[in-house]
Image (cartoon, rainbow, N blue to C red):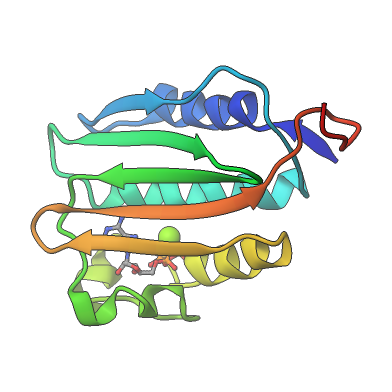
Length: 158
Ligand code: ATP
Ligand code: MG
């Protein structure tokens, strides 16, 4: 199914922005040009939901979450960036492993199973994209993923 990514992404962010209980501000850097991605929308929703709920889970009171995407020749590069506690350098790639959680004690209190990002990686790679994280302890974390796009919903370039 083809979806207009900018609208799809904004709708998911809206849903979190309306229901969040934390004092966290959302900033969007989302082009309003139409870019279409061919995806299983339920699965992509699940991926983005997990990335945003992680960002909220680890955001400090008064923090910001930045949402954006940039466009290259054939890929959208999506980013969700938080001001949270961050992830130690040696663990940044492991967060995409099944059941991996950075800090067991801390994570147990936060809830969750450690599957969210492993599922995200599977889904994004199945759609021809990549997913990775950049993080600095005490500063914040940015999750990036890429997806191939088309300029119209027939899947043709203009
Ligand atoms: P689940 O998503 O299954 O409910 P989870 O959120 O713990 O559980 P993942 O979403 O796979 O699992 O994340 C794995 C781990 O990566 C988390 O437990 C956390 O330690 C770390 N992590 C993920 N996102 C962030 C973030 N934005 N800031 C800091 N740590 C993060
Ligand atoms: Mg999660």
